[in-house]
Image 1 (spheres, rainbow, N blue to C red):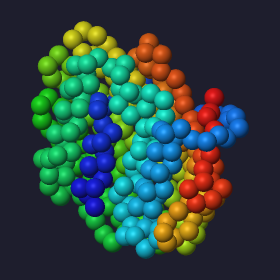
Image 2 (image 1 turned 135 degrees about the vertical axis):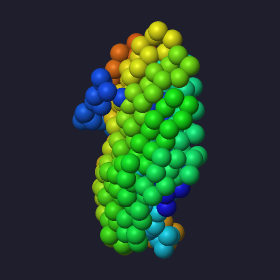
Image 3 (image 1 turned 90 degrees about the vertical axis):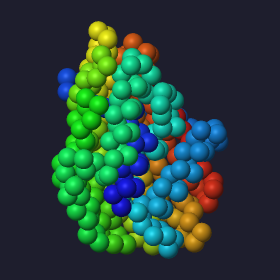
Length: 270
C-alpha cells in the first residue's frame, strides 16, 4: 500500500511548495449548457470512472485506498494549463531541482532514509509518521493517514513538505491532500482536495506559485462491468502567486453530467 501512494505522489510533484504564499480557496464556478466532451474532457471522465472504482473496489475489484490522495490531481490535470503546465511559471532551475529531489525521495525505500519505521499499516489504515528524505541539499517529510471502513468509505489527510537549497536553487513548500469518499453497491459520493504551495529562488530570481485543486462527486453506477450511469462530477482548480499571474495562468473548472453508461456531457466553468 505504501509504495502505491508514494508512486502517485511522484507523478504530480515537479517542485514542492512552501511558506509565504497560501493555497487559494477553491471558489465556486458558474456553468453554461453541457455539451459533448472534447477529447481531453472525455479522457478525464474515463480517468474518473477508473480511479473511483480503484479506490472503492466497486464491481468486485480489490479496493486500493492509497490511491485516493492523488485523485484531485489526477482529475484536474486535464483542465487547461493543467498537468506539468501548472509548473511552467517556475524558473527552469527550480523545476529541475524540485523534480529531481521529489523523485529521488519517492524512489527511496518508502521515504525511510531518516526513519525506517515511519509507516504503520493495518487492514483499515495507513499512517505516515515523519517519513523523511534527506539528500542533494533537500529535506522532505511525509505525515498523515488514510483510513478505510471496508465496503463503505475512505478518508485521507496527508501532507508532504520539503525545504532546501542546491545548485543555486532554494525551495520551500508543502503539498496537502485531504478528502472523503463513501459508497454503496450502486452509489458513490464524496470530495477530494489538493493544496500546493511553492516559493523560493533560483539563481537570484524569486518565484512563488500556489494552487488548490479539487473534485466533488455524486454518481450512480452499475457494478459489473463498472460504469457510471447518472450523477455529476465537478473538477476545479484555482491558482495564485506572482509567478502564476506573470504567466497568465487562470482558474478552471469542468462539470460532468452522466445520463447513462458512457453517456456524459460537460460544461466549462467561469
